[in-house]
Image (cartoon, rainbow, N blue to C red; front, side):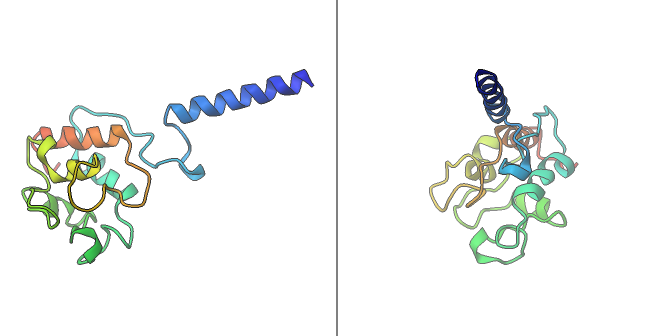
Length: 147
């Protein structure tokens, strides 16, 4: 019996360490952005759009043009860059992405839950990982290039 208790304790510890480190497999309730690593010079196409594709582009969120519940923000790859950079937000009079100023960009404000209108993004889903948010902030602070 003691041997089984030891196996059980080892399994529970392994699960706790995996969950605490943010590496929970996405198929078991983990966030798809949990395995993202922070980059000092992330690219829009890979690192930023990749986050949108994993978390924001659902049919009832930012994956449909003109959907009223999403601040009229379409984040599908074809137009997401032009819908973000130097564009005023619909919910608050704050520019969605201000190149070189992540802290005051509405996209970051919404991701961090600092908005005064509406809810934090992604609405109704697990929060985007801190590494994914940091990559978005780094991209903005590097000039928000369309790269």
